[in-house]
Image 1 (cartoon, rainbow, N blue to C red):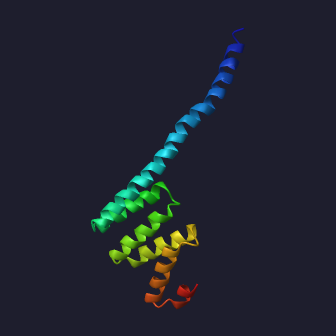
Image 2 (image 1 turned 90 degrees about the vertical axis):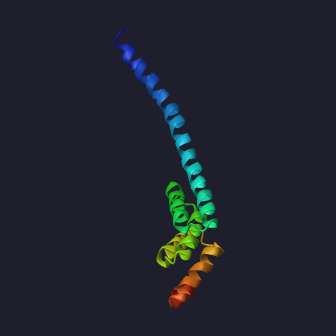
Image 3 (image 1 turned 90 degrees about the horizontal axis):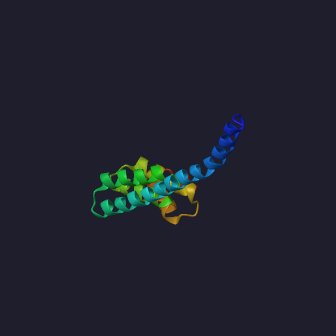
Length: 125
């Protein structure tokens, strides 16, 4: 009778592990999405106030929480263009096009950047 007790406890813990794991992981995932949206909005406010360096940091934080946040890449590209960091801006627009190949804003900015730097073949592509 005492030997069966650990087996019953093991089965109970095994069945309890999955719900506990789900209860812990779902809020963590939602918090990342909320943080991404929060830093994106904060970056837009800083951009409107023309504090471009702070805005770029906020957009980077938004991207770090959500790697597939296309709009954050685009806004980060615009902010870096304002600070004349064209290589970083170009990389942000390239990443936005990789995530959304039909994004006209990112494509237009890339074409203009490539054209301005006399990279005509890249502009055509």
